Length: 360
Image (cartoon, helix red, strand yellow):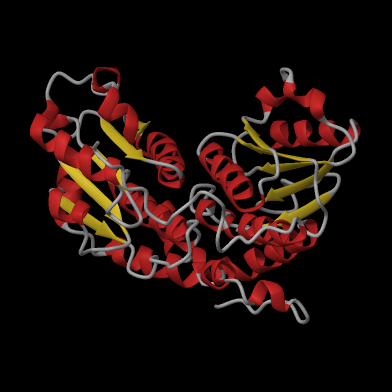
């Protein structure tokens, strides 16, 4: 399932971030398999919960946004996302349940060593909240502090920016959500999501081509659970290439921000499932105002009236099951664009792989 770089582009092939991103399909497949044998304690904590807080920092927070929105949709229960810093600095604005024992906290951290993640796990347990760690490293400080741990077995990576770790931890959480929702269709589609990887590879090739142009600005649109995916697209583009990037709910883009549309602006629409037709019309409007557009839809029916560039990903899959597949195309776009702009995406400026905060 590993993707070859297209012939002749050795610069991308040499990037550690590219190579790790290209194995996201295997990481997703391994994560879904791991979720099917998740510790029973995970399901017990969720079953007893009245309200579930999902938290992370940076990419892990955007992952939390996706997971919480998907879980609300699938289970019709109050899953909410909050940055780790909000739990530490303003806990009264996050925890609203009358009993901590029924308000578990899911802490997401690729490394399991991020300072805020470890501190939140400690704080939550002190207050009596059950805790679930989601990580790529079983032997980590976070894992040792939480009641139960979910591990993406093939998601860990050496690169500074998150690629396959995000996609695989998301797939892991979504498979657990499918059990909580008793949604056999979602579960079965997650089990086979990796078989759609050829469509992901085709979209990545498009992203690589689009990254050969030095865009003045990029706008990413995503609604529902896909808003967190759009936010992660924005972060990847910003941290690897430093191109000005903004993220909006598609219909909210009409309320002012659409005024930035002009030649040199790329508008990306992540559409699929409920609302796809309405959201596609917003992307079409952006094209009419002069922006270049790229639509990532599930199938030809959803993209029927699209203008500009179109990629079809995950046709036939449950809209939530295709979400982990939407990350690889932005990696291709961001890494290609970084090289176009003279940046080194393996060494993004001011960043390290793990954020450790000096308590002083």
